[in-house]
Image 1 (cartoon, rainbow, N blue to C red):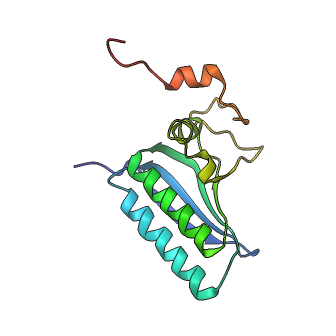
Image 2: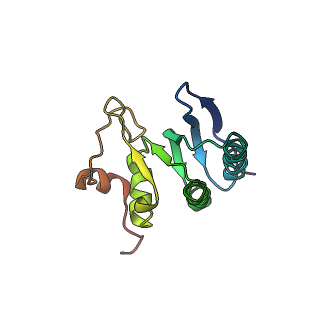
Image 3: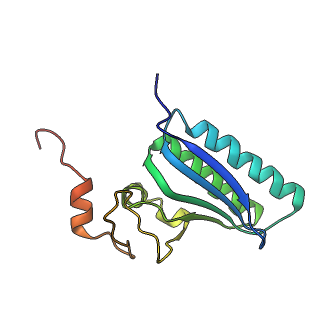
Length: 147
C-alpha cells in the first residue's frame, strides 16, 4: 500500500479574494484524489460566491508529481478557464517544471516564480528562468538502462 509521504493540502483565502492552495509531499496516484476533491470544493465555492479572483496552487513543497497529479492540475486549469478565473501554479520545482515541459503542458498553466523562492526542492537551489539550464536537466534525467 502506497504511503502518503507527508502529503498535506491546505487552503487559505487572502484579503484580495485570492485562494491559495498549498500542497506538500508527493502528488501521485494515492494522493491525487484528495487534491482533486479539494480543488473541486474550491471551484464550488467560486461558483457560489461568483468570484473570478485567481486561484494559486503553491507547489513549492511538492516532492513528486506523477501522471495522475498532472491530470488533476490540467482538469483544474480547464475548469478555472471555463469559469473565468485564472489558475496559477506557484513555484513548481525544477523537476515539476521539467515534467510540464516534457509533457508539453507548460502552455496550459500560468506559472508564478517568486524571486525569493528557489525551486528544486533540495536546499541548494537555483532559479528557473524561461529555460531549464542544461546542468539542472542532466541531474534529473537519466538515460534508460541499456541506452
